Figure 1 (cartoon, rainbow, N blue to C red):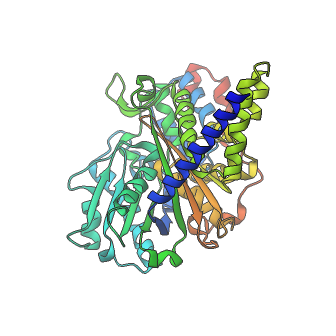
Figure 2 (cartoon, rainbow, N blue to C red):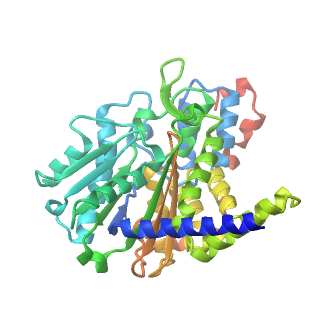
Figure 3 (cartoon, rainbow, N blue to C red):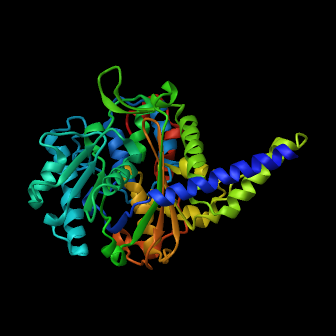
Length: 458
């Protein structure tokens, strides 16, 4: 028992010390405005168009059709997501640099025009510009294209991040936060999106076909500052950010990769070890995040129960695990989860003990916009705002996953009541819908009973 008490006291002192250090080292980082992107209606991927896209792929056989049918139906994605123009127009096998530039520039100029107008900030006022796109790089850089379009200052600091996957937006926020620590009274813009067109997979390898079912077009532009005089205008304040990287593990490193198949067709490979890597990264991230955001009473409870569990060796593993789990709801009011897929949302929700109300923003984002890679967190946040959930003083936890393999998380405080519908304006009244069933099964269920000869007529 003495060992338990000493262990408890030591753990408590250590947690208090960490909290004090974080407070002393903290630097202001505010979100002033953000703008999500909604492509035009002619880029929507409804059931009929998705069926046409699959039919155009002549490398698919019966088993691949069945696999795709199952993947689409169980994905949690609806009929109103968006795709690149070159794919919709039937040029997915011959993407050009021009196609890629059109894809990203449509997003750049739509969101940035709206962001500058909404915030009443001039492009010449921007001190820092960060752009993250994982799988498209060009010269001049994408930041240079933005600078040229908006005639920004010659001394603007620019950063291009690539290859970071779905967790890139929080990495960009972390980069800005670190610059803020040494540069006072700055304005920064983070531009986060993905370029899907060049990496649409036209082969028949199942681990690479899957990304076609999940990823969709989208993006977000975010205006940040560390100027204390702008706090009264800010929407959110960053309280802490934790990054976890398992790249040293071959298994984690190889589970999500951009590559070519045996015939040289490019795409994104999602390996069978991805769920295992994601779980490891998630646990490690939460282990570091917990002491930073949870109230002292929850930390004391957890440390005490954990040490008692070790002391009481006769306790069953099931009882011990449930009694010593951390309750993140004691430090978080809203959970902004990466909508990477239905299984991802359900797994994270189960791990954190979340309710259907907590998971609704991520589920609805996946249904309406799909997985837009690094930007999808901001669509989830926009859903919460459109539903008028975000009140002054509320705390938001963002969790994202990405290739590498990475898990990044951050904790925000809401600085004022928010109710802007943002990108959800035209449809928020109809969400959540009464039925999330994907109509793909209704129209194409015959594939499950088809023969190889019959499938060629599809």
